[in-house]
Length: 105
Image (cartoon, rainbow, N blue to C red; front, side, top):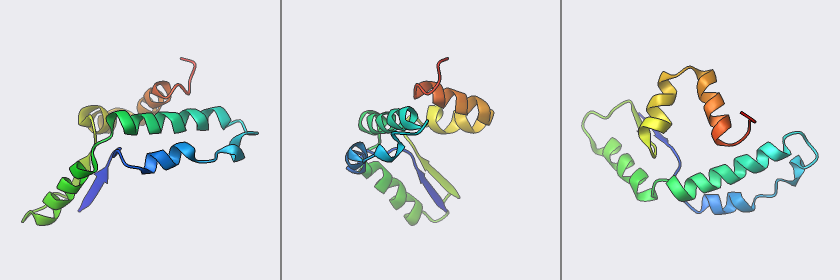
């Protein structure tokens, strides 16, 4: 059995926001790293599941007589789980890059 959590709103993202990324400052990745950090922290705070929701899923998975092989515990399940699994990988990558403002499209 696999439990696959999406974004869960925890204090981990507070630490991530303060993470020193200066090692990337002189690289071509600096702008992308900053955008990624901001995107992830904002996503967790605004759309992340409460930790209790993940705990409920773990409880269900461990206490049911015939557990599923996979439990996807993600916010906005259709957008963040179902659709990406149905679409071509390059299309999903392009959509994520655009959402994170990593492209000029």
